[in-house]
Every structure is written in structure tokens, then in C-alpha cells.
Length: 382
Image (cartoon, rainbow, N blue to C red; front, side):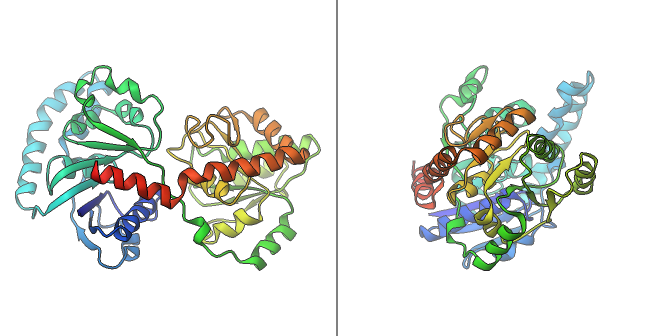
């Protein structure tokens, strides 16, 4: 089968890394794969594409997609008039660009980023395909809520992949054209078990930080680093002075360092920046914590579960990974008290800790490459 993956950039983002995983799975299954990058200035991961994959740079800005301007219809009173005037001209420009694009033929075309430009590229047949798939990195209802651009383009798509089925039935209200379309829930596979762990590094981390909490994620608004720091302070007030290690970088990195100082827990909060050996840190950790406001699918928690670590997380993914609180300690978003209590239970009750170690391993099976490969086969062939 000949398959095309279309991306809105191939930088060092989570979507792009997951895309590489699925490209590798397709190649291992014997499929021929081409990759299109619609934002070529972001192409750092292009060098990691597997051997035999053809790579095409095709510029298509989101601003060149008429559906984008539907954002203004609900935002401003005059938005519907602006959209009516702009749309024909942008549509004409997009049509002219399509005329000068070589339209290769595929069995399946996948808009993998799920953004307006790669979705347009596939939906409007800038490449020809018997089946058109859109990959939604979260639950599909969230995309419908963002703006009208997505449902406009979804009309031309055959199949959808989501990470969560939360609220999915609600898309049929007022969108009858969706009723005949297939929606598959396929998790992101995790390959962390295949990575080699450095025993010396693991021992050094344990000696340095003890039975520490690990948090992995980009330092950006909404990722909940402030909540994690407040939770460490709350634990300290309970007499549990536990170290927390933060991996990642981002625009609020320095702000969070300042917050730790302000709350008097700077000696317990360790900001180690970006690390390539995350598996060493997970192996050395005692508990993994996610305090984010929103996640499509929290890969860091999946990886921790795969290595048998108990996890505490906010309900940032509508309970998808945690199974509604079955497989890890689950709290409401922003609930410092709830996070503190959950961590306290794992630190002070050995039986509870071991229970969640076992539950993590049980849940991780749903993210195994073998299982995901079977689901991918059904998606491509169904």
C-alpha cells in the first residue's frame, strides 16, 4: 500500500515524534511511505525519517486556506462579512497553487498534524488518494469547538483517528454528514522499553534526589508547573520533604524557578532542562506527576506506566490514560490538596504504592507497539 503522511512542520514537537513512530510502523508492515512537510522551515526531524521514505517540501500556509478566516465569524460582529469577502479570493489563490502542485497518487493520505493547512492539503486533493484520513491529537469534539474551519474540511475526509472518545457522540448533533464516517481511537505507541537504561546514571540520580517525584513537560502556560511546586510546598508542610525533578524548557522556565524560591522550596525543586535520557530519570524516580490543565494524550505518563512507575495526574485528558482514575491517582485540575493527598498515600502506604505499580504495567499494555500495529492495520484496510 502506498501511504502519504502530511505534516505542518517536522520540528521537535510531540505530534511530529508520534508521526515518526507511525511512519516506522507502516514501513515495518511493508508499506511504501511518502512524507510531505507544509512548513519546510521546521524540518529538524526530517533526518530521522526511516530509510526509503521520500520527503517532499511543499509550502502551504494556514493563511492561504480560506477556512481559517471562519474564526472571525463568531469572534467579531463584522467577521461574517469579512469572511464572505476574503474567502473567494483566498479560495482562488489556493486553487491556482493546486494547479502548480504535482498531484501524486496514493492509496491513503493522512493529514497527520490535524491542522488547517495539512487537512486542506489532503481534503482538497493536493495529492490524490482513495482514502483520506485526519489524525486528531485529542478528542474530536475539541476540534469542532475551536472553530468552523474543521467541520468545513471534515466533510471531505473519510476516516478520523482520535486519542479519546470523550464527548464523541456530541459531534453528531447538527453535523449529520459525520454519521457515516468512521472514527478510530488509536493511542500513541510507546517504545521506551526498547531504550537502554544507564544503570550508573540511575544510581547517581537516586543518590542525589532520593525517592523523588518526576515531572516532564514543556514550561508553558497551562502545563501546571506552578501547581506542582505548590504541591511540593504542601507536602513539606505535612512533614514530607520530597524532591521533585523537572525536565523540559520553555518560556516560563525562569518564572517557575522564581516561584520555587518565593514559596521556600527551592532546595526541593530541581530544574534540569531538556534531557535526552528521560528513561533513566523515569527508572530512577519514585513517582511520576502530571499537573497540566489540558493534554491530548500525556505521553510522559504512558512512558512512566510502561516502566512500572505509579503516577499521579490531574484530569487533563478527560480520564483517558488513567481509565477514569482506575490505573493511577487522579485529581481535578489545579487541585493542590488532592495532589498532595494522592502523593502522601503513595509515599506512606507501601501496599498502595505496589498496587499502583502493578496497575501502571497493566494499563501500559494498551500502548504497546504490537497492539497499536494491529489497530493501524484495521484503520488502513477498513
